[in-house]
Length: 96
Image (cartoon, rainbow, N blue to C red; front, side, top):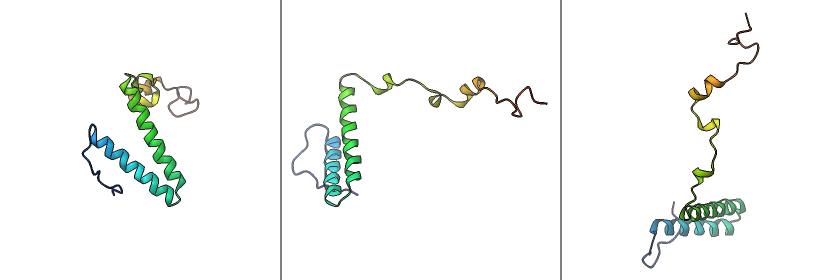
């Protein structure tokens, strides 16, 4: 549910981003006046993260470039052949 008022003037530039920030700041102010400090912190963290990501993207730094692949990113079929069997498990060759 939208809580902010529509702007009184035309928006220059990225209208969707402007409206998104406008809504976020309205929610910050409402949460603050209604006594929800953790809601304020969560919304502000989201605004800060968005600004940082947009800044880095404008400078040519994409977060996917700094992230290292892990087993969580690989399909199970690629990991399974590398898995080691636990001694004593039914699949273990040492068990009769």
